[in-house]
Length: 227
Image 1 (cartoon, one colour):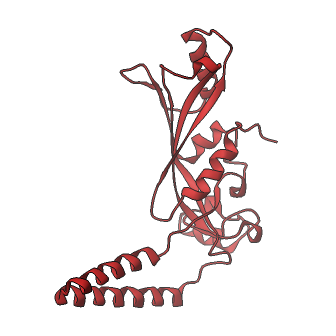
Image 2 (cartoon, one colour; image 1 turned 90 degrees about the horizontal axis):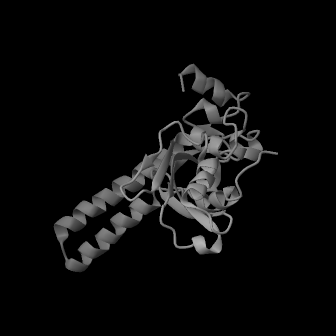
Image 3 (tube, one colour; image 1 turned 180 degrees about the horizontal axis):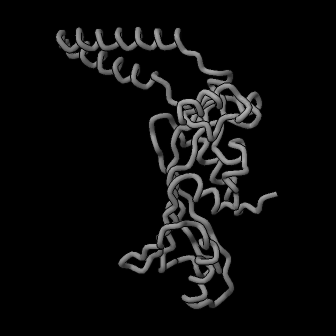
């Protein structure tokens, strides 16, 4: 069993609600680190460095106010910080899933709302333009659905980690309760789809062979085109 930080499951729970196709949303939480009573500034910094050791290949930055900022780029650095080996772990144990997936319904709603406003204002030119946009969009969506050949589990979506920024503020108000705080801010992005129960713990469809089953036809296809 991998020794993951106690806040790992909190991250997963939050990200499942935050990840959407086409967006890279931030989610942020505050982590409490226990310390002994009456510690010095050097003692506090040693605790923080112990948590952040080997977390990133980038040098830590210090702000004008003395705050320390670590940045981890991509999922590999972040997973290694959680003591998860990206090379030896299936996506089912290192990615965020299932996540909410934004479909074209949002665009349809936006056009429809604009059309209602134009109709209310009696703008015939705008009404005609928006009606044409809506008709073209709905036709395109219908054609897309008719030709879609996604694998089983197409409604089961995944996201991955793209960036993590950890900040330790030098001046902390809660030190009196014998704890330090780290602000952890993470950006995620849509990864692919597929029910892991049907794909041996992997995705069924993605843009990279790294997250699909090595025994699958999809893996062979992606490898053949260099993905």
